[in-house]
Image (cartoon, rainbow, N blue to C red):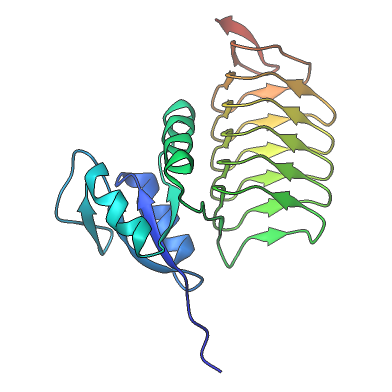
Length: 208
């Protein structure tokens, strides 16, 4: 039996777009990118145009995912696409290990060699990037980005639009607010509220 793959359009033809397209290949029929500043092709797929091309693609039944690494930009773009009536895709790389009891909302990307543990919950538009992990019973808010090689231990709560930087780690049952930046290599061992930048081992507030 031949499986018919659903068509997928990626919004954002940057480096992160290449990674999401690679993760989607085989599970989706990637038809190309939408980008407001680039033309030609990207990562072996055509750039289909800017936002003006979206209405035509929606009529063709294309699903969409926002392939923008920036949390605020991804949130703004996904909300626009949802208002237009697009069905948002969830992309999971074949090498990812995702528990059967995990819940992953629409628009999220779970990339190569990642782990999402039992009863973990990812909000919409999240990224769990290459070789990162989100362990059991975590709650990750909408549009949060867990960067490559970052590890979030069990029972952690993270707010919306937070960036957990490359190679960082978060101790079990910690709470991190919304719009937080956790610096590269940081070790979060205490709770932090909203709108702060935390750096170091152990991580401390270095800016707001």
